[in-house]
Amino acid sequence: MYKYFKSSIVVFAFLFLSMVVENARMQRLEVKINDPNDFCLVVPKDANTRIGDSEYPGGETVWCQGPKSIGATGTFNGKFWSNVEVSRPKNGVIQMTGCINVDSCDRLRKDDGGGQYDSNGGEGGRGNPANSFCSPYPVYVELIEPSARRACIRCCQNAADCDVTKDTSGCPAVIPGNYFGCA
Image 1 (cartoon, rainbow, N blue to C red):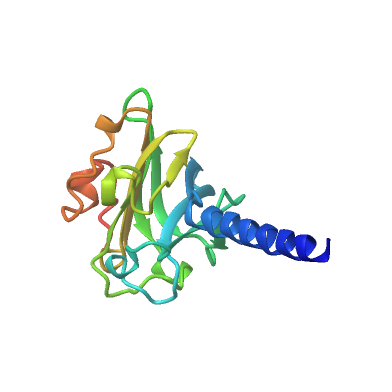
Image 2 (image 1 turned 45 degrees about the horizontal axis):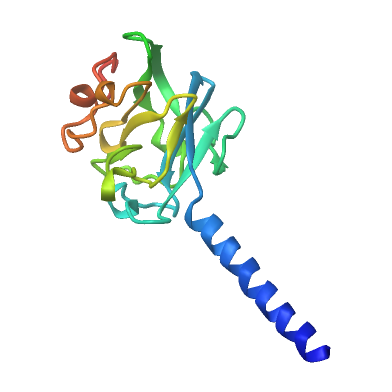
């Protein structure tokens, strides 16, 4: 009886740890746009990191201004946006474009040309970070360009409205909008 009980505990512990590891691996990061004071963005997980250097499994996290979302681990230190426009350029699309205060997020480097996070790019089209999404939209594309003091995010019902193929072209090319002459 004791031998059976001991074996059962080992099996249970193995299954429990397997579920914990799988849950961490499949964690979904949620970005959102509600208004200039209630949004969440993907940022590098580690402090003072270039966007491109964070693009590996587990290298990203979500920071918010306002209520946190699923998977969010940080809050911006002061206002992230110095000048921002929230718009709905077409049905099924919401976006934020504008100038940023790089100092509001210690994860960013002021000299970084930036990079892109999205729901449909990356390995196997699963997103970068994988399985990320924009609530309540299934698709998003986000660029942060610290050296230009500029960022943008667009959330879409239709993947065709969130182009993830111009990841080195910059915010104005990927998400046309108002950038207020950020510099």
